[in-house]
Structures are given as C-alpha cells and as structure tokens.
Length: 242
Image 1 (cartoon, rainbow, N blue to C red):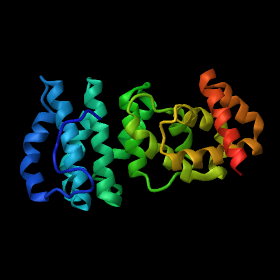
Image 2 (spheres, one colour):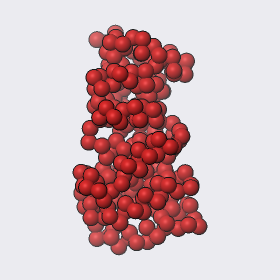
Image 3 (cartoon, rainbow, N blue to C red):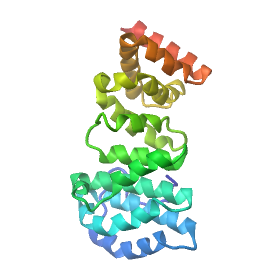
C-alpha cells in the first residue's frame, strides 16, 4: 500500500467511530473523483487505515463502503485498485464475520481480481485482502491462491498470505505441492520472511517433499535456478537440525 501518513491508526489503536462518520462523506467523494486518480488512491488508503482501526465498529459503515469499493476495485488506474484492495482487506478483517451477511462484497471482489489481474501490487493486495477476510483455508480456494503467488511487489502482504496457506496443512496442500513450492520458494530463498514462518514452511516442504518427491522436484524446477539452489541449502539445514 502507498504510505499516506495517517497518524494514530497503527499498533492496534482504535479510531473513534463518530470522527470516522464525519470524515467519511469527504473521503467517499475523493474516492469517486473522476478527474484525479491520485485523490482516489489516497482516499482508498486512508479509508482502509481508518476503517481497519475501527475494529468491530466498522460494521455499521459496510453498507456505505461496499458500493464505493465495488467501483474502486474496478478503477482504470492500478494504483487506485491496489489501495482499494488494501482497504477491502483491512475493513473486512476489522468487521469480522459481519461481512458475511451480504453488506460487504470484499471476498467476491478479491476472487474476481485474482482471476483477472496479472502480477503486481493489485493482485498482491487482493491476495492479502482475501486471506484477511477468510476464516480458514478451504480446498476450493487453494488453486486460485497458489496460482496468484508468489507475491511480486507488495511484500507487506506476503507473511499473512503464507501464514494462511500454512494453516491449510499438508493434507490440503499435498495435491498442490508443485504450485506450493513455486509460491513460497522466492520468499524463502530471499530470506525476506519472519524466522518462525520460514522454519515452519521449510519443515512442511521437507515433509511433503518426502511424501511426493516427483511433484516436489517439479516445483523446484519452476523456480529461478539461484532460488532453487538456496532453497535446497535451506532444506538441508532444516534436515540437519532435526
């Protein structure tokens, strides 16, 4: 997401709903401004930051936010779409299960983006938004998620997405082992993941590679050769520690 410098919304700090209600008409007007994509992008990011900081208090605003983000998610400008999905994820996560009641089109919009967007920040943010709103991994989602990975630009979304996949466990992931290796390999090879997540992913890869070595080799072959070599060394290190 583009950093917009909204103070007082990080670290789990709540944002007053009454103040959000006062700001929302101006923010929605900016989000719909046909002449200024920069204003639309900025408004999407700010609504996401503030709406996410509302926590469950975001729920009453979903009927107003849903139609606005349905339009923003289809904006011609990719930066607007990227920040729209940033906001969709944070607001959906804040509202919790309330978004399942039909007022929030977040999951629908994310699925559409994952099917239609190419690599880049829009798809990265749609991935992050979807997993933030999805309670638990399900078999039907895995091919779509894995097909949209690896994260290519917005690395802030990488750890949440890979943690979500990790929760799927070997039983659901094993049929997709080659795609899973391709999805997690770059982040592991570039050592850009949190240490605990890396170790958990490497242990899972090692176990699934033993269970299905042929599909594991197919996945490794899909990686950049330098990444494949680093991943092999990391897996040897995991084996040596066991």
